Length: 339
Ligand SMILES: Nc1ncnc2c1ncn2[C@@H]1O[C@H](COP(=O)(O)OP(=O)(O)O)[C@@H](O)[C@H]1O
Ligand code: SF4
Ligand SMILES: [Mg+2]
Image 1 (tube, helix red, strand yellow):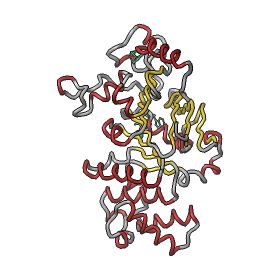
Image 2 (image 1 turned 45 degrees about the vertical axis):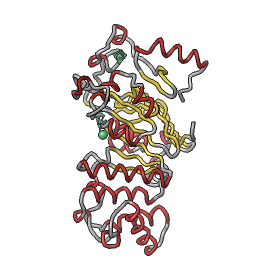
Image 3 (image 1 turned 180 degrees about the vertical axis):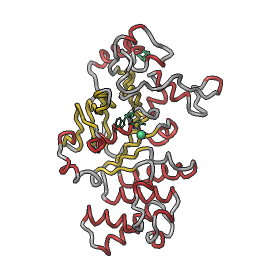
Image 4 (image 1 turned 90 degrees about the vertical axis):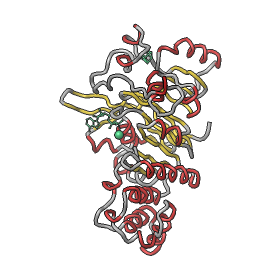
């Protein structure tokens, strides 16, 4: 296995609501290797953003609390750090980009200044140096005539250009990890593809690791080295992109794949939708959290929650259908390689 950059173990985040403390993520474990992309996929409301904000400890500002778990980043546990210590890491070694580029940019500062500001802050560059480098960054993220564009304000640029500027700001600190939360969801389809190509390019050129959050399995297929599938606050399946697509195991993953247009597992070429909706936080069913929607539900599923079961090489699913296979796989290997 390649070098690990981020290792999250049993991360559980809660919110205090009128109904009491509810868990938005439940014992999340994931690993991001150096220079690789992990896609976190799942329907809206499954806890993807809460996961990323917890890793960055921005959840503290959204009234959330980390109840349990470790966030090991380069040998340090971010879950245990004070907010002032995190400032050094956030926007520096770890950068984040969000869905809506407009809300990330300052409307009254030209875009060149916004990148230059980040360079001055994180890399102690002089004003002139920072401006020159800001223009180079604009060029790198594919903005034509960067010298002219640098002097423009966000409202003079298209949504796609603004997202490129946001990416340039995120890269200004030369982060080792880029967290991108649905970075293309607000953009039209052709621009989406361009931004994804850009991220892929930058990853290859700069060796940055990426945590890419998306509700779109098609995007994950294109971008991921590893995939973690999230459902109602838990990661229900994870593995390499090859494993997930060639041997999807958890019925929820299978449902997500069957809803991709053109995916071969589709029945009669029709787009499949998973029946039902994600249960509300604080109102999870007993046993497997997917059981009310699962076409394969068994008695046991309604009583006992499944843990991670190994279903392939570097591939795990939380589903009782694989209980026997999992035991055989673990016994056959003589060890459990998870973690
Ligand atoms: N500040 C908050 N207070 C209470 N609940 C929240 C808060 N932020 C998110 N949630 C809840 O956590 C759940 C997961 O949300 P989120 O991580 O945004 O989902 P996703 O990004 O997968 O669409 C949702 O049910 C949402 O209502
Ligand atoms: S454990 Fe049971 S209900 Fe849950 S996904 Fe597997 S078969 Fe379906
Ligand atoms: Mg989200």
